[in-house]
Amino acid sequence: MREDELATAVVEHFEAAFDDAEISLEEPYDHYGNRGAVDVYVRTAPPERVSYLVELKADPAVRMASGANEILRQYRRMERYFYADDAHDLRTRLARDGPGVHLLLLFAPTRKCVEHVFEHRRLYGSVDPDLTIDGVDAERKVAFLVNLDDAASGGLGFLSVNGEVGVDSPAFLKAVPDGSQLAAAIREADIDLEGADGGSETS
Image (cartoon, rainbow, N blue to C red; front, side):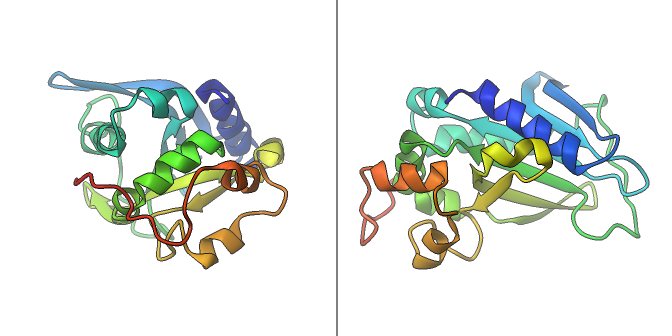
């Protein structure tokens, strides 16, 4: 599974889930030499303007990365510099219900990604979901994509690994949809659901 396949599913989901959403692929940012690109950038229509910054990781990216730290550094760079770029604006809205920005790090539902996330689950699980950006409430979500086949109808799912439920917990496994690609990947993955220590990297 490639990242362009994931991007297609994410775009289809947001097109179906929101009317008149602005969607950009590979949205660049540049703040005093701190350059990068967001895989998918979405802004919902006014008046409830909400932004989604999406970083996608499939098997090739996981294979090439030196570990979870490298992936998290890229994710945090997006958080730190995207709205510092003058080309992007973020406006406070007192009446907004919920976060105004969602920072999504989304993994493909594959055996390789499952093994990677499980190995480094302590690091990914330690990502604090809550923050503010320029006074706007925001949310960080590290998750597996699920229900890819339902993306065109707005049914794409995001199964979080940095919430209250650990990726190796019975509650997480119970939340995995039966018959899904993620369920198959978990069955095929070389993981120990009973007691691996989550890797030795530190953030």
